[in-house]
Length: 458
Image 1 (cartoon, rainbow, N blue to C red):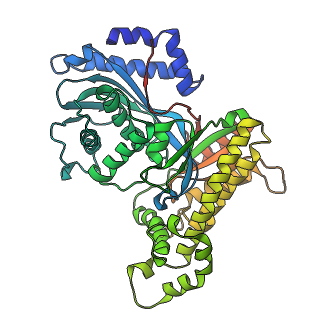
Image 2 (tube, one colour; image 1 turned 45 degrees about the vertical axis):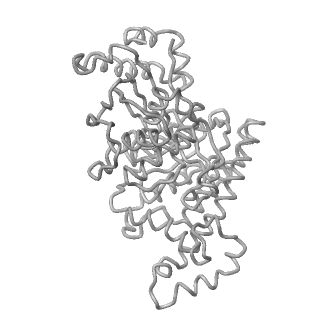
Image 3 (cartoon, rainbow, N blue to C red; image 1 turned 180 degrees about the vertical axis):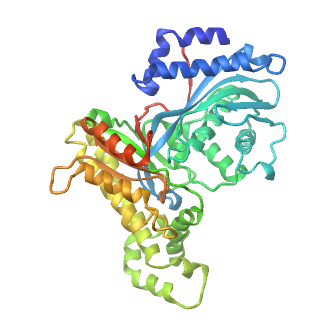
């Protein structure tokens, strides 16, 4: 539809239903204005002589961010995870082009302009948005789907650096745009996720698993089993914490992620070093009973004086992280079952088995995985403090009737924690954490049932 037609549709009653399904009722006016600003910017700020196509057919796309519910640091060893898409999303109003040029503008970011007639990998684009667009276009081409360019005005509300997968949402957004504009929108959520992941791995030059893209593309809560990386099992399940009386929150502790790359890399490396001890590539290939039986041998190998990459990575911490992997895999299965029971008998009581597992996951990350703070700088423990304050808030000293749960969110070491707070206590909790970490450090998440999609407002 044309821009004028879309402006009219944004004010129509049906658009309110669309916004309600995506964002809930409390942000209806805010999101309507957000879309209007994007559309008006496309119509008014893109000169017609350079972008004549914006006066013609316009399309609207939305891809949610995601929150990790369970399975902390398991996907890189082909484990199991539980995640859910959220109301914070990346949105783009798009005009298809007949040539091979892409012009992508996003609020608070630099304009991205490139020609995708050449789909070869470029060293100078690694780490840049251009690499993602070119890599995604290249994968469509490799799959037999030639694509043209597009012009887009976008806005990404997924909080950067919060573990909510802002970058994965953008990757899936590009994949969804190309698929719907030039391939009839035939690809599944998992296929779009794989395309985004491959572009990030190869063109963007950042190793990543498939959890983030899969959760963003799928919608709702999803249990994902990565045992078969080419064909992971994805099972969807509805999840609404508010219906059981809880607010699902993240707290940004404002910690810096700089210089943490070695900490993040050590987790999969140490897990894989244990797998390598058994002649395997990843822990998913190792039998847990065999692992437990051979624990003395693993520790002995770590003390040998002959330095090798394997032996240097082995040690008690690697063993503890392997224990976390095995336990967390079982916990994801239990969490999935607990959510199924919650959906069947929704109440504040039936969510408690799930919250107990959330607490177990958090304790395992703290004690076994050990990704709450960096040992290089033990005086900085924003996550540890946030978790301690939240536990104390949920179950004050001397009481035994606490409700709710908390855990580290995402990669750890700095960044965010996740908390389930009783709705009637939410504002008190907000006052507590924002008094320490600053205004806006608490964000309430809503699980969005809709994944990557093209929106129809009329």
